[in-house]
Image (cartoon, rainbow, N blue to C red; front, side, top):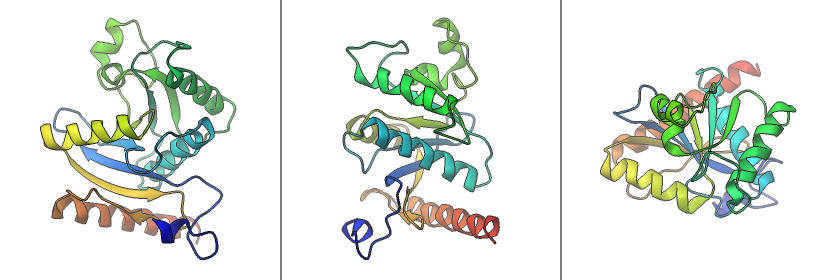
Length: 201
């Protein structure tokens, strides 16, 4: 990544660089995107804004439409003692005001009520995102990395991963990724790049 972020000759843009995994989970009814589990260690609110927008841009750029984005935390209520709940609230307001575009953003949501309608309804959560998330946005790299590895090693999930926010998509998989994940990452980056070329002529 050092060459990518080089200020003179790199591929940086004004947008914060972030990583997105696309995952096929056997117990979830559609593809699930996870961000950022690989690059930003303790992202600021502004970083998270870009992380969310990068994931939305990838989802839309793959021709998948208008994503439902769950901003994850340990709980689904705003609690000043849990900073990620405050960031989630701010990100939702940013989406309302057009600072984040192209997706429906909701949070804070705990993981269970982000992906399980039953769990969400048990907790009295009714929204367009709860139980139907397309994109999971984790609070920091530690949470994201552990969630990704739990899903791949314990649940047998296949994942493709690319870096967004640069001038071109960058393929970046885990060092432990198998050949199938690496090929899927290449395919995802190629589809995104070709669709972007068509869109911009």
